[in-house]
Amino acid sequence: MTRLSSAALAACISIALAIAGGAAAQPSGPGAGGPRPPSIDGLPKAPTAVALPKLSAEITGPGAMFDSAPSQARGLDTAHFGYVTREFFASGTADGKPYTTRVVARMPRDASKFSGLVLAESMHSSGAAHMFEFTSGYLMSAGHGAVEILTTSPAQFTALNAKRYEKLAIADGQQNEIIAQVAALVRAKSPLTAGAAVRKLVMAGTSMSAGTLVNYLPAHLVYRTPEMQRIFDGFLPTSTGANIMEIDVPLIEMPTMHEVETNVPRRQDSDEPGKQFRLYEVSGIGHVDARDNVRLHPNPCVKPLSTFPHQAYYSLGLYHLLRWVDQGIPAPHAARILLDRDVTNDGSAMALDANGNPLGGIRNPYVDVAIAKYSPVNTAVEPVIANPSAYVAANGLQGAQIMCRLSAWQEPMSAEKLKQLYGSKRNYVGQFEKRLDELEKQGWSLSVYHDLILADAKAVDF
Image (cartoon, rainbow, N blue to C red; front, top):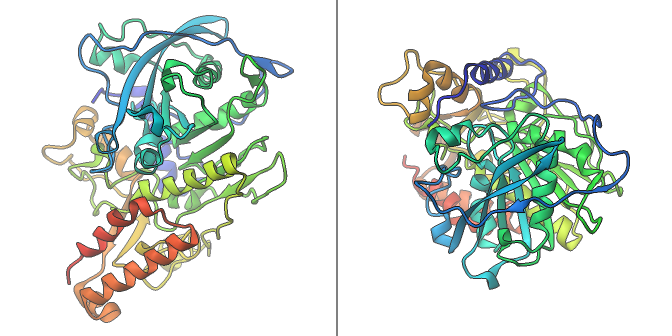
């Protein structure tokens, strides 16, 4: 794992400290500060067609490709679903200067299985396509495509493989035009989708890349395809507490417990054209994935890592967004996590149930049939643990502090309490599966994750 710059590390630490201290800041994850307020500076005054960038042939060498999806859930990877990952370079002009960026497309090997729906994301500056990682099980099971676009410095690419990535060049101020141009190319039956037509294209982001998405929204209102059509049909920012501007397509925002504790979005749900919006707060979910993230294994934190499955619930948001934009089925409304704004009673600004988990929000069997308490903000072990992950080894205690403070932790219940609550493991698993089935029927859990979620319950022993 490439070492982050000292400036990037400092920004990450300030974000993590803001979260831990309860400041009203935007937690945006490793590698960047919080999103800036939307701005129209430098944008065209009227809808304007973007120029399509020039796409290279598929990049197959020299050397290894940079892996931007190392943290996919086990058993739900591209090989399992028959998908292929292809890398390209796209070149054009943005902000008056030339650029060459990396674009990675993940599509069904069998083109006939492509749904016509594509998820696009700006790659997180940490080097991860997190939204693909988080939603890959649902996305690939449904035949959807995924495209990631590099919009930040390519330094970590050239550090890994200077020869393969020597042509990459991106300057400050080019980000929004690069996103618009490459996304317009996705819609143009390009090799990115093996020449297949795209019915709908949505953009997602998490933490830092959610900030990129929020900053792009003013550009979304003016940039168009060469045929003067809208480029994106919807947006899904996650792990952000931003109060997001109104736009002309559906948008689902998904804050986590970290944001609910520190910077609660105040925007209300709406079905009004030009204001279509949902806020989805999943009870129990933390800012970064601690279950599958390779940076957090072995655990460098003081408390046990949360095993809450990000992929099952961010996929839920994507599922409802795609139905909204493709089939015209408005996303269902969800309750918000309740706040008592009192940290003196239980250490949390959230209202907690008898087991210490948040009340309200999108329910799930992890909190409704609980065997643990899920809380935001872990802390790093000092000094750093022996044999840490490559990321922590490269970035030391600072890296561990970043990841731990942005991750959630869980406190398992004792065997005695579990017996009091459920009587036996058999009764517990039965109650858990019953609740899971109910949530699937209600549209609050996806069947593709049924076995993964149920396996967690079956692994509990008391």
